[in-house]
Image (cartoon, rainbow, N blue to C red; front, side, top):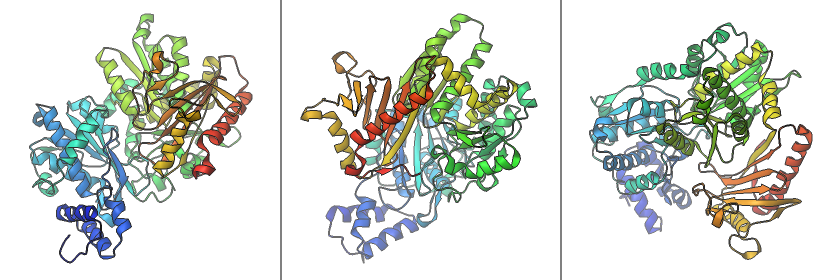
Length: 610
């Protein structure tokens, strides 16, 4: 330990703290650690140092603060050194091609951490090794980073963001040379390289010097121009857009989205949306919302509804803070607001993208080259549309890393990937960005809304029309909060060992009989030969139950939050329009799953906050 600091009584903890104080040049985080040692706050020190943030396919995400388990200047340097070292070994032309780095507006004054500073330090690490860096001069939406990787042919991209997480969090999201998020085995290779490069390199702290380097370029202006040029390929009704009288409200929920969505609407010749004044500028405190996540629904949209009511607007668009997701709400004839689920928006945008494509393509055979994708926990509505219209539909594991990489494979084979979505309000409407993109989705949704208005129709009416044509797909998704990993393991293990035997899953849940089980944690699938799943195994817990009544339910853990999520859907055949009965059947199924599989009281699970 440092002279003047007493031992904690835990040798490994003392070593971790001592190494930290030797490496950390940030006065705030170093001081926080020294204070904890002086105060004998062993438990707090263990929380900071007992483990290193795990680098996975989603990169890093954690609270900002001192220690190896938090996002801070030193862990950013260590992570980037590992990533840089891994890229050096992987790409012979790494020093010719380089990387791009973007960042959001998050900040944590107590630890001195903020996204822009983290991005500058990451740039310093690469520049110290002679690697060209395209560092945005200002905040950008996350989709701009994968767009830049593809546009400039770079080896990798980094986005410093925690997306819609609570304000104290930050993250480090990584893209590969193909423009998609990294998948295994790159995560393991990078993680190993981080462990081998923990000591800061001589110039890694020299962010100010790096910012003067000739190796540093600012791509902001060029990428801004090229991105909005690229998304205009998906603008098909410019005349309607120009004349549209539909009033739309947009909120960026204190994130980066405002100016970019305004520019996207302008690129489509749509009238600019009304901006929620209290939320349009970036603010790391997120002062007007409890959670900066539009997926949480009405609570985040209260100010948007108020503005819409004042202006006579009928639609609200909301991005999450890094603008890669999009939520939409529409005012009903009753005066109430309907917040669409991610699955309903997937149905609407999928229908719209195909309708526009069909108008542009007279060759009937071209549809055989067309693909749409969704994650396995999302609605099967695209599958129903694909079966009737003749295009291909594929399912991937949860997360856009899988859809982005699959889309890249298909594009490389000369296929057309028209649309991909996940139920967590993520949409890929353009292959220019192989990830979810809330900016292009906002403009495309704006055009769809304007078009529907010319047909005296609304989003609500159109989603009903889609379900009537292709079959009702009713979903109900939620989650429980659980911070105890042992409880989570035990909960899933109980489902895998009914009657005390391995791979012995439940055959019923309440009054509902189970017809098939797929466990992507173990690779088991009762529907496949040899019970071997086709989809790759998942690093998280993930079990899907198919029920005899046509219901499907997936239970999974989150890779970035302390949640056990569930996704349920009941799919009806076209023509079965007894929606009330279907909803009641799904409600009963969800109640049975919660009671029999989750056992919230026994496991002390916290329900989703209202």
